[in-house]
Image 1: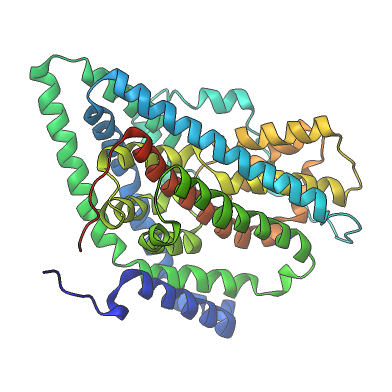
Image 2: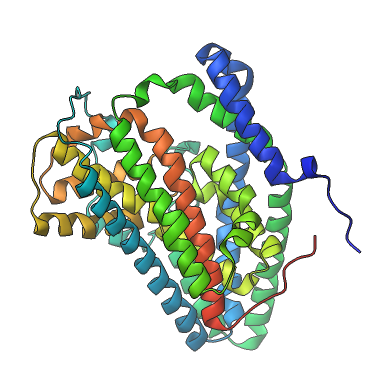
Length: 417
């Protein structure tokens, strides 16, 4: 009979307490106190980044080879992509309706800041499509110059690993079996390493949240309160209404019970604002707590952390229309539909790292002829919104794992631990 864990020893409780402590310390200590504790957040993020690429590579290859044949891969791939596109479009349409009803930018008296340097190199849709195929798959797995701002090309890594897995299925048995055994071993070892890293999550969350509050304070949020409220309302509706309905009706899973299994991952992604960095913890929660099969979750979650960005898609749409309203530019229905389409493409191309959605905003703005310096209107509060939309991204990925598992007709019993 399993032993009952004391409430304060549960990881999600420790993370929530660390979250509250970080807000208080950041508010009380300000920027002056950051040198005393912000190193813990950086160390935690480096540990997460350390395990992300090998975990994604091993999990994708194991997932594809575990499916057994190309027909099975087509079944899970088709269901996964239909879920991704459907939920992203629902999120964008939610944001579109709200931003037109609330009109947060109409009459807003805001001063423009200088255009951020991150907008100098604007990726095109063509470049996003070309990113699917890495020229050097090994180089695609590393941080350029060991810089967190130049992350691995996760989309390229996933494409190569999918291709590698498919070709492994077609290899002769004497070669296929050792390869599959090897990558399964790598996957199990990476999950063990991830487990040790995750135990440090409370310290990382404390430092990351304290740094955000200490550097930004609360004053920057006042002028953009209506814009922030619109994004929050859209994200809340999508997270608490749209996704739970899909989870209940299609996945046949109780939303509240499922969310409790994901608390550790959701609180961690809220503090780190990185769905890629949180992926190891998300996979642990989905597999061990929620009982989703490894065969499904190892395919759905890494792919979702790269291309399924519901929160980012909603944000792109709301932010673009807010900027248009602030400039006094009235977009036609056709132009708004173009915003919907480009928001979907931009969310697919956005990396799962902090402020990635802000970088991709240029695609949406240029599609309808809006000035790029409009990003200066929203950059001051982007960190807080980034934390919220990243949380919705991870929640949608987790819901997708449950939905795809139900559609595939697979179900494992939840862990008793």
